Image (tube, rainbow over all chains, first blue to last red; front, top):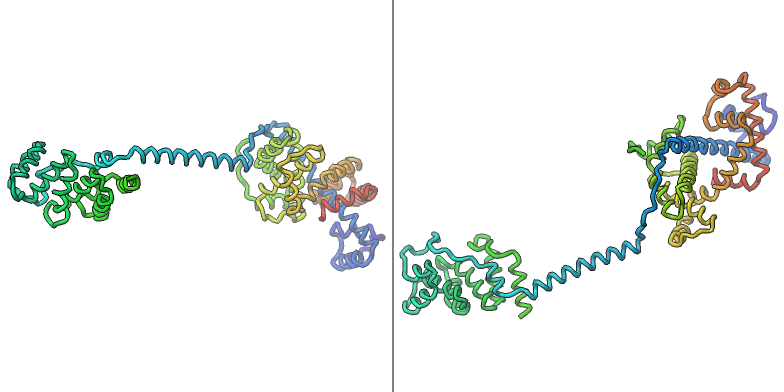
Length: 254
Length: 201
């Protein structure tokens, strides 16, 4: 037992300073828990010590604060315009509305400016005779006329020839197409597109274009889809990327 | 301020609760967080001076909470400091009879959720009074009490740093200074209660 301690305050101070043995600590704690005056005294002492520690913190922070002030290293912050959440919401809605308006405007522009001739022109590619696709080698007058761009001669010759060959029928169909007679082109190209023959895939492609020109969008869409779905088709990658949506738009507008 | 090397929250807490001086940790807090927190004050009717004063109090409050074990790390230090700043500053504005309309509802909601921070805010006045009381003790008492209870220095170390003859003389002086401080606090029951709230909750 610590004989130097005579009164309650000294015991409590020694306790709080960690200078008591385990047995003495237990004694003091028991006193604090059971005797009101010990409890009150202990509480005051604890608060006093904690107050010193709090004061120490404030002094240490003040010292650092002064260092920053003396070095001039505390930045002078400027007032910034704060966009409150409601304003940000309105801003977002405004931007979204603008984007939607622009999108709708562009879509409407595209819709009303879309025409079968425009789609035809975007997708048409001139057929090049003489490319080896398994066609018959003998040159006919129809073929010669087509190769020379004499589409009306091709049509005349077709009327004089009783049963043109497959290749000639194909050139006749193309010639009608070149002369903007889509209906006649369809008449010549459709049988070739539906039957198995060396020019079947070519006929299918040009038939689809003839159908577009003839404003028969549903049938055109059927052929276009068929060709696009067949990755081995000669004209699989020939169409413009948006041809399907364009045909649907034209069909809807009809 | 120059670009600061980032210190993790856990490392910073260790530095604040360790036996060594907290000077480098406090410096880091200033470098890493002052600008953001000062901007909040300036954007809400505060001046540069207000920002400096409040930030200093925020740092004191934060370190006190850390050493009392009341910062549990449930949020980041940055978030916690921001909450402290917001509460301290809004209460200061209330005290000055100014209103920040859009913060009022948020402030009320905040007080319910963050009692730890609210207590620090309410005891701002108490800490000012404590400062005054400590200064009334005189420099020698302040020095001994701080060296022993804040610096955790032994009697032998205190003898080496002061002009006292031996450890017993220091011990006696410390006892007298402590009793003097205790009497001053007891004489101000409101301050004593506020300190209890501040230090114990």
